[in-house]
Amino acid sequence: MLVFYNKITCQQTSGDVCKFLHPKLFHLLGGGLSADNMVHLSAHNKRARDSKYIEQLGTYDPLPNIYNEKLVSFNFDRIKYWIGCGAHPSKPVAKLLGLAGFFPLHPMTITDAERRRAQAELSAAAGAESEEQTEKPAEV
Amino acid sequence: MFHVVGRRSAPVTRLLASRGTVLVDSVRGRKSRGDPVAKSKEGRIKVPPPVDPREMVVLKDRYTEYQLILKALRLEFREEVLRKKFEEETGSLAEERARQDAEEHRALMLWNQEENLRLLKARVLRIQKEEEEAERIKMEAVMKLEQQQQEFIKLKEKQVLQLQEEAKNFITMENLDQRIEEALDHPKNYNFAVDREGRVVRQTVLQ
Image 1 (cartoon, helix red, strand yellow):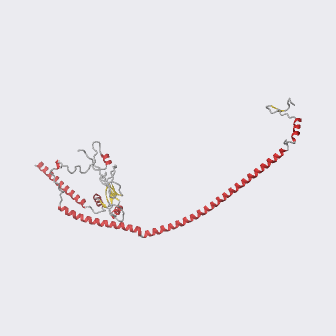
Image 2 (cartoon, helix red, strand yellow):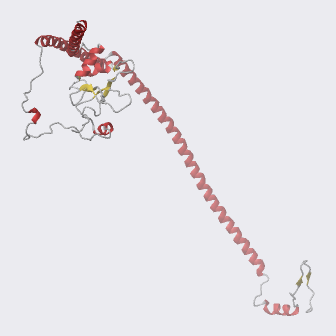
Image 3 (cartoon, chains in turn purple, green):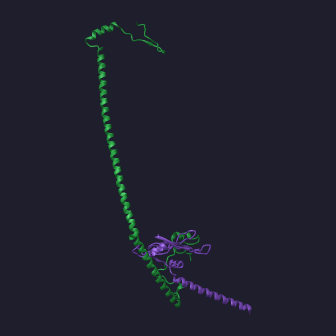
């Protein structure tokens, strides 16, 4: 069983407004072993990924629930503050924010979707061809 | 060969590992510098992932647009943060607050002064009372001492008088002969008998 926890933490770049020592970015943090596998968005400076964070900026549950949805929450006020102080989001966080509408949609989200669609079309076409081939011998 | 659990922290690894797995922390770079290449990788040529040029062009455009928007957003947020900070420190509300704080401080200082005065008065009264009390006690002690002295004197006087009175019956050198004669003339019998009911009998065989 591959258990995947994500906490999004904030590392802060040197901003003069908020006096902090290390550059920071906010990213996904590994959470603890809990029954619901919750994932947190948090802010912390240049430290190990899972260590003490400055602030939690949201949650992300990677396992879909009974309605097949993955729940995400954001604290937009604080995210704005941290970005204003010079924090940068990590790639998965940027993608999530893009999907949420706070950021513009990430290019890789679009390209991945296009690739998957092309793949699906290809496999559908291949499936149709193989069906035709099986039908033809059957007819003949 | 052994099922190595993915790169996780030590306690999580221990919790996640089932009975069969060997607990090994997956460490990068098992081979050192002089180790030969593995047999399965002998003719391997590392090739970068294939890139579709059309897709790459589109992707680059998208990225430039995305970065532009993000930069703008970042600047906006920064401006907002600065504005908030500025307002917090030097806005109209800040002045009001400062003024109110100063007023409150002044009022509190006044009240403090009044309290001090009140306490001072109370203290003065208390000290006065204590002094009076001490005076009274001292006076009482002095009086008591005097009284005791008086009593002592009286007692001694009484004793002297008593002695004087008793001295009249003393036997001196002049009375000696007379008193001897008297005693021989009047013999006194001190014998008596008492029974349980308390009846005293003074009549004896001697008399």
